[in-house]
Amino acid sequence: MKMNKIVFCLLLLLLTASFVHAAMADPSTGTKKLDLTRYHNVGNIWLRVSNYGFFGSGDDIVPQYPSLEYPGGSGIDYLYQGALWFGAKKTRRDGLNRKLYWKTYPPTAANDTLMFEGQEGWTPDMKPVLDTLVTVGFDGDADLYEFLPAYNPLLVSNPAQAENYALYNALDGIATASTRTQKRGVDDDGDGRIDEDFVGYTFPFREADELPTQFRAFGGRHIADMPLSAFSVLDDPATAEIWFPLGFMDLSDRSFTSYAFAARYDDDHDGRFDEDGAPVSEQDFIAYYYDYCPFGTEGDRDHGSARGRNRHYPLNVRVRQMSYQWSYDYIKNLVYVEFNITNMNTEDDLIDCAMGIYMDADVGPQTWGVEKPRTTYPVM
Image (tube, rainbow, N blue to C red; front, side):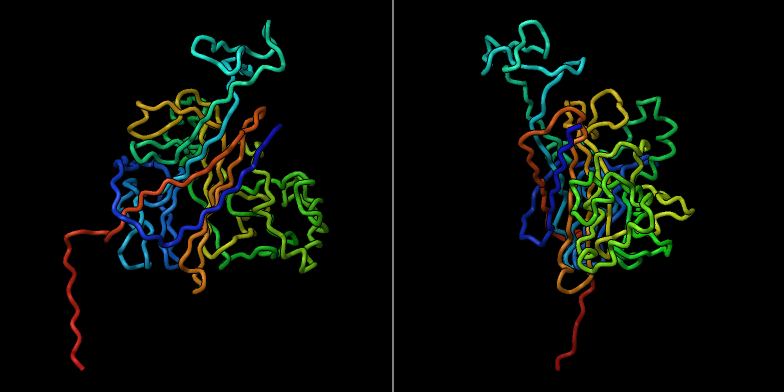
């Protein structure tokens, strides 16, 4: 199984920006909404994040603030909407999942015949057909979303998932954690294990040869299943310094079939939920979303009022979005956003991957036309 794991990080700093007009998005309504309720506010930048590929408020929530409000509490926003865009080249396959090749390369308008592997006349030296595809968190020229959580409104068209949809939709949102309540590399719950019960579902570790030498005993296993003796490796301060279980996880794991990764989960089966994790900052927000349907729902998987004018060809990637903020003076003017992008294709690599951030940086007060009372001070 070929799994390409790509990690991108974004630092959102205060930038000079001008007024920009963007397409108006449809507000999320009802109980089956996508999650846009969380925003960072422990530092000096107040930024809203989502679990469907964008940050900032857009028009998807009322009130539309804070949306990169700076300084926090000032009522001045610097962002309408930002979004993850991800593109790559992907092998084209036919309806029977057969890999397609060009009979003649380079193809021409007069000779663009395709052949599948093993077809009469096919040879191993033929060039595979590679499609250049891009998935967008939000399209600024249309109301269009192509990164969605597992339990999104489109899943209602899959009868086999009706029961799970009713059960998990409200839980498939943004998970939260904080160093104010838990510490990395510390046995928070006093059970002898360390960091074994993260917020939400705790993925297994990557294979041993992908881990630092000190932690190879954890390779391919869930932290909660490790014997107590395995955690003695963290008694060495030098080893504890590089212990970063969030970065060691195998995000291509398919064993947790409910796909409700953000929901509270008792990884160590002790009757408590998410009580011993390894948060990074004072305010961690973690979300999971996809550019394909992990349940195999048929049909075009995009959302928004412009979806009827769009055909989305997925890359089959899963994104874990993690955003962090601190209140300390030296770092309070920053929000750190990390995208862990995993190729979930079981047969094909993604080639020439590229990631970008779409930014529509509307700048101005959160409300217009409201005159605030003036404050006067005595002349000294």
